[in-house]
Image 1 (tube, rainbow, N blue to C red):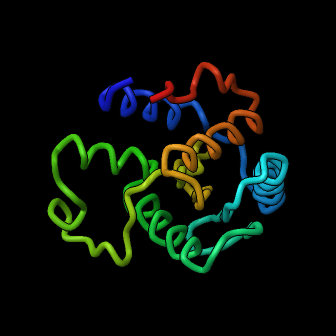
Image 2 (cartoon, rainbow, N blue to C red):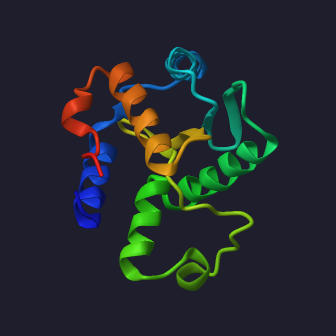
Length: 165
């Protein structure tokens, strides 16, 4: 699958993966599901679920480092600013042959357009937060978050996942 196909598929994911409602309990359930998936697979990841300005779930699994926390922060900043997946924003930049520094003047110390942070959208409210995975290659971070969201929302992951590279 090429760059434009990935961009289109992520846009579809963003349209389809919408919560009917979202609360602290929802965040805990989603984060716990993601954590269970990661533990079962032996993945060294950090998981972060938040409403903008409020951390609701956090887990750092064995093998992660403080650097993963920084990646989470920087990816979350991208979603909070653009209300798009951090991977989608990065792929758009790649398609234009630019970086966030060049196109937006945003410092790389605060913004990371790498996969793994996905907007939490709620029907009737729009984007209210994000779910983030950090510790794997960026496409795998993105896909783990998407798989958990599909599972949680009762969506067909096979129909929404990115194609193999």
